[in-house]
Amino acid sequence: MEAKGRKECQAKGVCPQCGSVGMQWKYGINESGTQRYKCKDCGRTYTPAPRAHEYDEGTKKTALRMLVSGMSGRKIGLLLGMCKNNAYKWAEEEAKKRREECAFDESIHKTE
Image (cartoon, rainbow, N blue to C red; front, side, top):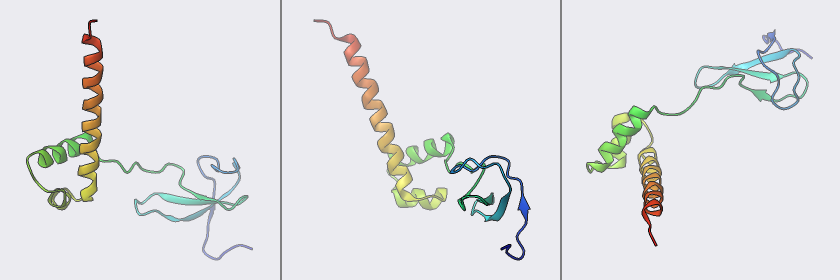
């Protein structure tokens, strides 16, 4: 049974679940503006080429500088238009990366 107002179209890729390359239903649009599809064979909805939801390195560095200078995560989130937890998460990741680098450097310089 065909729903009123729906258009069939050929999706650019294959269904990620069943591998079907047959006709696909257009099935709305994501918040990011990308087209959603529904597989006619298995019923799965998917986005053929989803957009990345990642901040660029410049934004991350700016948030880290603000955090190190003493600004609160909440204020950083308000100024940069993001969740406050992002700044804290990036600070933890940076600290972990630096600890690993220091541990690696110490293992090179050990002489026994």
